[in-house]
Length: 159
Image (tube, rainbow, N blue to C red; front, side, top):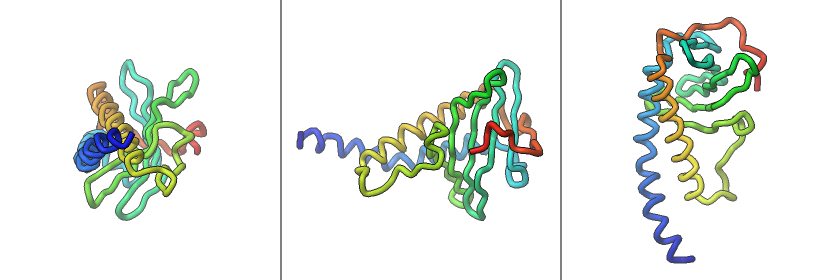
């Protein structure tokens, strides 16, 4: 068992060193996807042919950070999937996924009970999945020009 832990640590250290690059890639993809209206509107929707509606909900807005919910909403059932929660760091030009489901949206996953290697692996998986989904959204045609501000946050997006 001790040998297995020693083998895993260099891999965890590599992932930890690469996380900032992944966060920068997410920020870059978001800058292609999200309109400047983000600073003024709390909720936006993007509609493209052959795709579910993509909703962007600004949950928190601060001087240096924003907390966003980005989700597909399937019209017939109003099911949200995937449902990404993203912390956007404006000054550092970084962004990170904090969760991919409504249940995890406001939970904390750091603390003394979770070993650091578990946090790194979890963060790597979430953020890798987010960057792939953002690339998919851009390929589908979602982007700055397709988002439109809506006046009222739909009830199904309420946390």
